[in-house]
Image (cartoon, rainbow, N blue to C red; front, top):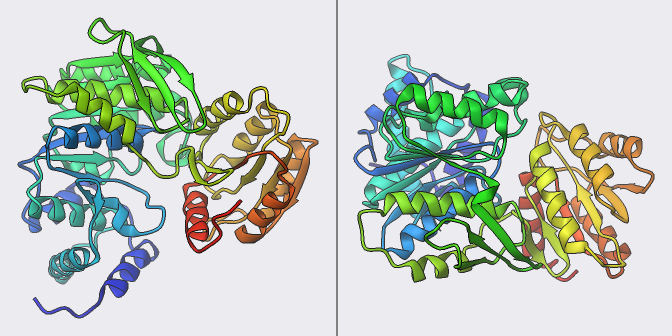
Length: 439
């Protein structure tokens, strides 16, 4: 195979795909994978869907499996800084050299498809195909697949024989595609449920849980529903959280995680339930599970990106509610009020997010800015929305650097929180990595 491109050109090619490709049917994805040699189909696949928390659940499952010495592949989205982040082996993003090798292999297949009149894979399909090739070559035992959008029609749902499916919390998001009610969205997520394949799901939302249970019964899939009664939060700090599970096995055991988002406890419990099932027939080392959760890091989720600067990828109403609950706990009893930096993409329910934020979080000031994406909402427009819902000061800064500098100048003893989009979280991390690390 002769290389005609370098890594930078390959990555740039992939980033251009959304401009000239479209979403395809699962049959198209299956044909694409067939031509790639059906990589990974003989591995143990864990398929995870949900509105919020699915990336975190995948990350926690991955860490527990690795603690038991299992070799894992993890396909996730979106990325914060580099596209390589989407394809991980044992939690290490694929190296540039491997990325380029696999890109060239996939491009050969894509060329054959186009010559036969078969459409070019979409952005997500292309990366999914690359990921499965990487995982097969790395000889992983487990492949953890995070759905990109929805579930029923998502490219990852072409994986027809997973060993376990997991559905995380469900709320309104992508309503123009998935439906405008919780029930419709739950039905799309439940599309990953397979005949006879066990399911573990977050049953916190009654209306979503009803839809998921009915689908599981229809498919003959044994299901384990996790409610908020399955755990108790013991302590929440800025750098850690402690909880216990309420089951008979380890109700007196304390689990600790280096995160502060209270919503992460449900995600961790879902992952622990998944691990209990996956490793049920093996001699496990529970002490290693504790160490794994105590060390796990998942970028962009209530992450302290710099002193006094926390980023969170909350980008839909449900996630903003979870974010706000955590910040209220962290800020309780403090005199200084937090500074909030916000940005969003146009296809999100940003007015609903802003309304909830203004009505439920006692911020000192809101700073709106823009993300570097064609779908961005202009900062001025976001500012106008904030003014409708709050009498607090609203500052408009088109450039993120200016927004961060302004937040630092006025924060006093308060904390800075950045939310509204995972793109914003990635931009903040990239900017801080460039030398702006002191708040």
